[in-house]
Length: 340
Ligand code: NAD
Ligand code: ZN
Image (cartoon, rainbow, N blue to C red):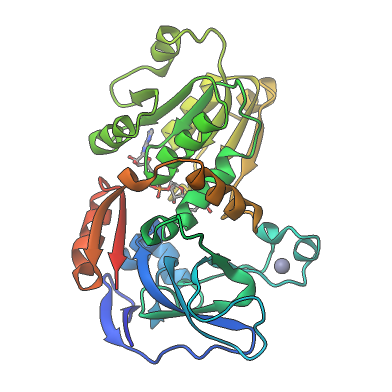
């Protein structure tokens, strides 16, 4: 089959011919229809320090996908050929304490599709039966292909009760924007999103987020005053991975505020821990999606009318993958979805 392969330990990604994966007894082979490019794929493309330390080459990458079941292993009982599906890209061990307790997202032995094992930038991807998620008929292939990052947004946003709360989202990348939309739908009072990139700020405005703030020119304290906030934010969703954004968030939280942190900083950075202590803040790190409660909620949000399609700014045939990666690397695109 054709696949986008991280073939060499240097920047770039290459279209090559590789064998179709062989499903084991408990695996499902999926013919990929759409696969979206994640920020992680950009790290792998750029071959940064994280990629160098993590990705064995050669590797078929990609982990945001939707498609149709093409074959099933001999022991698979829950699914059949022809079903429309997406899949959870974190493969958990099933035997650690958290897995046994039904908390797979907390597994200490998680492996990533398209990171540690072949991924979805191929004509076919193979995943364990337990990772398959059937997609209802009223959800399109392209929306199902961005369920992985949408799940990051849903997992982060639903970490804390949002009803009546004032919510600050730092970072209006695709995940930050989706997180802000989910916060609003979940009953938040004010939702404020910040970024420093004009294209991202424009995308957030296009999606109808109430208060879009350019952190490079506007003072968040002034904005809070203008919109009638007298105390501070109740909930923060950190979706930028940027130290200045996180520090500003800590400053602008109310006492007892809760922060869910998804953004990954390229290097370690300092914060004023005394502010965390004296404001009695509650910080929670987020990785991936809850298995499979987040998937259930995602499907419910989309079926309930949440329209994510404007977040997809580029729809390209797989052979145009280079334009797709260029768009992602520009830092100004929304989601880029490649079609087979
Ligand atoms: P993205 O890089 O597209 O978006 C981050 C945004 O933050 C950008 O638009 C950038 O302009 C903005 N930003 C930079 N500096 C800022 C500042 N000072 N104030 C406000 N905004 C600022 O990323 P994404 O795909 O939307 O993902 C969001 C974050 O979540 C990234 O850091 C990503 O690495 C991380 N992530 C984490 C997980 C996880 O499981 N923890 C999964 C997926 C993504
Ligand atoms: Zn485990």
